[in-house]
Image 1 (cartoon, rainbow, N blue to C red):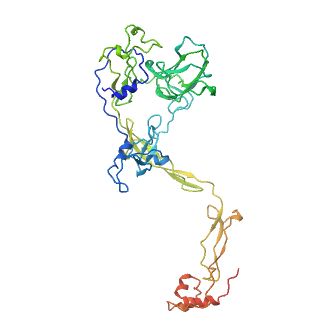
Image 2 (cartoon, rainbow, N blue to C red):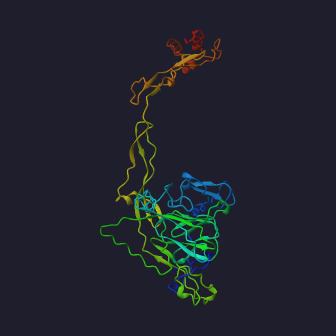
Image 3 (cartoon, rainbow, N blue to C red):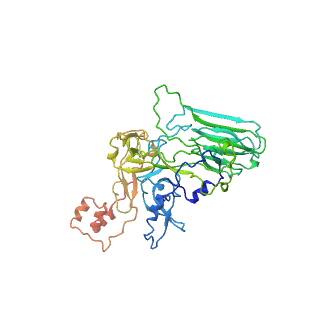
Length: 500
């Protein structure tokens, strides 16, 4: 069991102290938490600090302003400089593709775990947050809150249940009233303790709320929105300073059909003490938190009432008597699981007609939140996805085919090259359906340079068989023109020009 370092305590109390029903010490004395684990990508970059780059040593830090396949490269930037270097083609398996993302790098590729936590499962939550659902159980809850409101101060106007998605809460028009959000145990998330928070993102109920306060001249009131789904109920309050301008709300929640079969017993979950949060880890060691406040002697009886005040200042309680607000928890050890991951299909091997597609199949192990590429034998008990499948390219059209160009008929003074051009089908049979405007030419000019008027004095035959070369009319080929330079020069001088 551990307590956070002082910086975490300051962060925990930054929004003020909230009232809680858990007043007696439930935990043993706190111990210091171990230091946070360093970022894996930062560790991989810092490994190059001792290696010279361009004759100089640098202190390297991750450079993550990249897109696509580069997200799984180890790109590092020297501190204080504006350039970056790709040190390795692949980061270590299990490294996050980008800070704050759920995708991880495996074998140099950025992979996404499904909503079921299985890498490559492809399962996604439907519109009401059901993993792998088909929207058939989604139910829209919406309404308008138009009551004038009660006395000035905090008034609860809406409870959002666990499992809600696509949440929207908005005032009809600008007003002096403020929306506020409280989590389990009445813990303030947005606009608590009579302090107005700036617009931005705030975590509550297992999701992230966007708090928006547009300028009054835009004519729109404050609003809250979140994708969800929420994992815990969230309460929405209004800080009334004037009459209620009206509030619109809506969210989507799953309404599962009744199960007429014998229900499967749910695994036992440790019961929470009042004000406690769930364990932060699904398996292995995690953290449980609770809110602790100092109450005056006359406040304890109303500590559990909705909308109770913030309590007395901590200086009113005896020094050293404050119970800890966190403890270690465990829902059991993590078990290693394996699964096949199938990469994306490559392009079809055929531009047109039938072909094949390939993809990579790898075995991946999962322990808690850690993924690693492992031996395929570890996944041998699982059905292996196919790595090859047939595919169909575009419809093959009849098109023109041509043979290579023939040698030039003359070495100078303009010769001609020819080739065969045929219209063929995809099965290489003759056709007459090729477009005539696209037919390649069958003839082209070549060696248009003028011939020498007389043989060069230094032009000599280097073979005793040059008379045979002349008789066989081989002087049109560059090899024989060079080998029998003098003999071929006389022949080419008196050769008639090629017909057009």
